[in-house]
Length: 131
Image 1 (cartoon, rainbow, N blue to C red):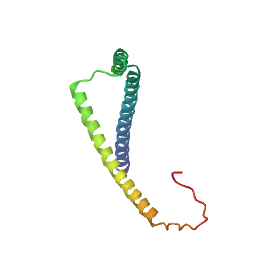
Image 2 (image 1 turned 135 degrees about the vertical axis):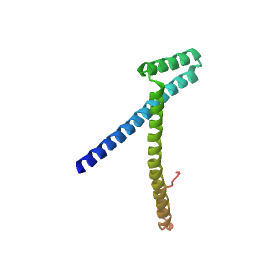
Image 3 (image 1 turned 60 degrees about the horizontal axis):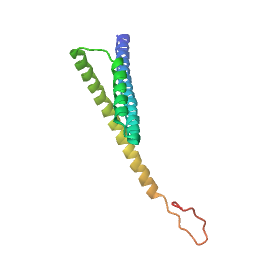
Image 4 (image 1 turned 180 degrees about the vertical axis):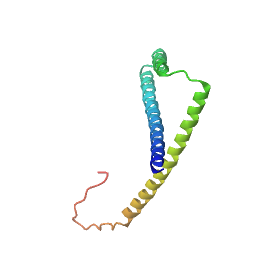
């Protein structure tokens, strides 16, 4: 019974890890595509040639589409639901982490304010912050 429970726990953890890995890979791919589009936009900003911009965008889209596989509507729907659930889980965990960071930041600011300020005397050497 104990071994079955541990095995069940192990499969849950593995599936969660796979889901997080898929989410991470998807986000990395989106960043990569965003950089490609940004580069094309920058080139267009420099030389104002629409043909180059459009051809670059079409090339990026075609290379991405060549990597994709056709899926049935059921598969797509199931995958979207799974992805949405994983994103919600991650958002909850990230929210907790952000709250902790906010609290730590506030504590650091309060700690900084509590530090005694140095009283300068005539003849002290100082470094100007914006000097």
